[in-house]
Length: 387
Image (tube, rainbow, N blue to C red; front, side, top):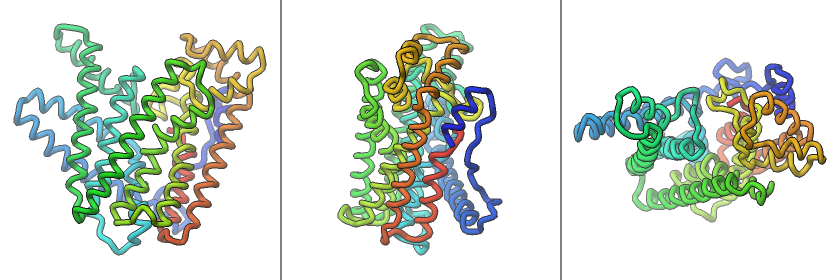
């Protein structure tokens, strides 16, 4: 499917994708699961709004400007997004407890993952010099524009970056504070916190490897690109949120469920990043909400590393232009070259293999049947998408 998407993008056709099924699904089981997941996302959003409004008001009481700063952070959290991490954490929890346990006690913990995500995105946008995110200006760009409009002294770009870093820092603190509001036995909350901390450590390590790869792309490899995917994306998008959810339910580290979630989460998380690699070259910015700029920056993704390894002499000469400030026409040609090497088809196969691995992991008997069905659907939805 994604290979077709890439080829369609090159020749200017609308990409074909597997539709994400919503409440109008004709399959009653999937329709019910989609509706239930949407209810969970709505509950997470309600929790976020209530928490962030309180936190923003508290900073506004210190100084009106601090309140304005807090509003930037609040908006960064609430500005759209798929809420994948709370959703995976929810089904990780539900996979243990079934349908009997009430949701409100764990909602703050689920919502905290979205605040943590805002921290990571805000810092990532500064490091990548990204102009847009979710179809709107990134925090550092928006703040820089405010600086210019106000006629303040100094470098507006530097001011925007400084404030965005502080926005990310504030989101990191807010995530901790929101997690602490989960109504759990103290020993369980401590165990969940250990899981949460390990997720954050691995995410930072993966981000560092991503930065390192951009600085030294000639010494990068497909395996190192996949290692970045495992730690920067798979770790905190799927695997750890699932384990986090299991921890909220009180599951111990030696449970067979932990092994099943780990296997599933690693596979889906890597497939998610591989899909992002394709979107970074062939995605429509109007749909993804951010530029398809990997061919301009030379970010050494698995897709581009595979293209280089498969390229003939002529293709390699063309691919050497990646990251050299190519214009729109050259970027279109480079996208064609990447597809011609067969790298797109190989990445598509890698995605399919990982989804199959994830579905096989769900055969573990310890998983609640409803959660098993939902996670099977999420494996497809998360890896066959336009954004």
